[in-house]
Image (cartoon, rainbow, N blue to C red; front, side):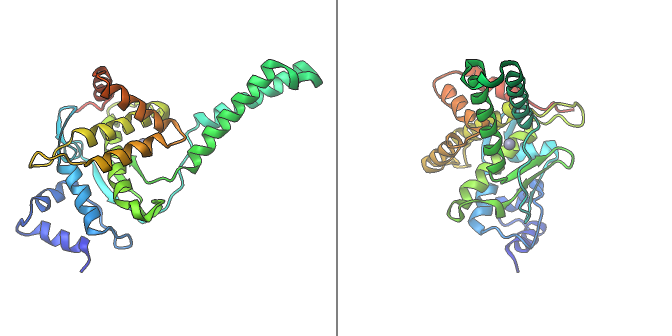
Length: 264
Ligand SMILES: [Zn+2]
């Protein structure tokens, strides 16, 4: 019997653990071709159930239940789709360089405007490539209302638990932000990704388990913060938002909460 089946059976019958009672509310998808270890599943459930006062919800479990979002563990290994704005940014500077070349002729390489444009092009290409190179560990599908985790894309086998739980919380933030289908709210990566990372770091700081102990220990908090900082894309700004919040800027938290899906 797999762990998944075991959990399914236990959650269908008499409740033996608090986790089981709430498991169904999370509606985890079951896929036999991808395995999570028991401590990994327990950590995700613990994260869902820990109390976290946020945007009118009392926990991630409460939030996902009320928003009708389920969590699916997928065996797939998809590649990340680079947002349109990044190749457009590259194209803009390529066109600009061409324009300057035709305007300035042979001497363009020594022209300051040309040199600046070249630097901008390199920056844009770097950002686009960094985005494409980032492992896709999870995503939120606003149409199927699913958080999908891709454990087979996790880069370091010895940090699976950390990647799984932080990705789950990050994607729960996207589910929180989502207004579909009541309102079409454009996904702007450079705004939403840092906010989702900030929300995840905020959760790790504030969420508490039943016995009022913090959900995350210092080691997990530090790991998550360092991981955000190390990102080469706009995700890393999530850590800067957290820094400001830690320094007492409470407006940041209000902005995060108000960037949200409305409940109807
Ligand atoms: Zn995201």
